[in-house]
Length: 166
Image 1 (cartoon, rainbow, N blue to C red):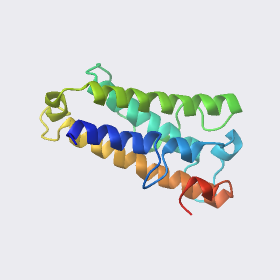
Image 2: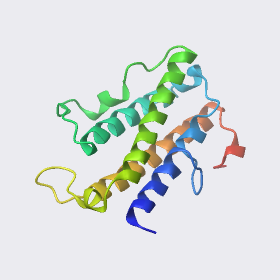
Image 3: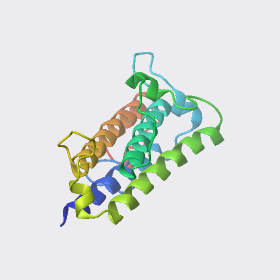
Image 4: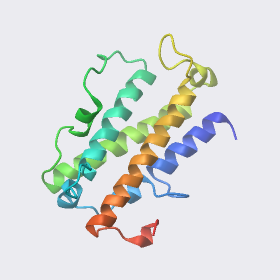
């Protein structure tokens, strides 16, 4: 297996192919807007906020990978959970899920079409970490938040253990 094949496999594991852990698509399936906006009364973010956060960072790094100039992010990480909306209608929730699905599909396509040289390039100027390293970390970041989503669904009683992770 090549490095590129490994990165694509990892991205699919996080996105749409449950294996050792539940993919984000599987973690979100059947979730209503009300359930997505639910908070457990602690400092935890809602599932909708977690989805916003994943959209923000995946879009941000996808633009960098594509070498699309964008303004350097100057906010704090907490603001990335807010997104366009953190609650709303079923249509608005499905739009957020669709946006996450779209950006992850775009990542998969970019990685599949990337050269070995591109994956070996530093992801940022004056940095030694390669794009391959960043993509691996992006996948770990997605997996981390999938765990939070599943935990929140368990807390609210909306998790179907038949989907995985008892």
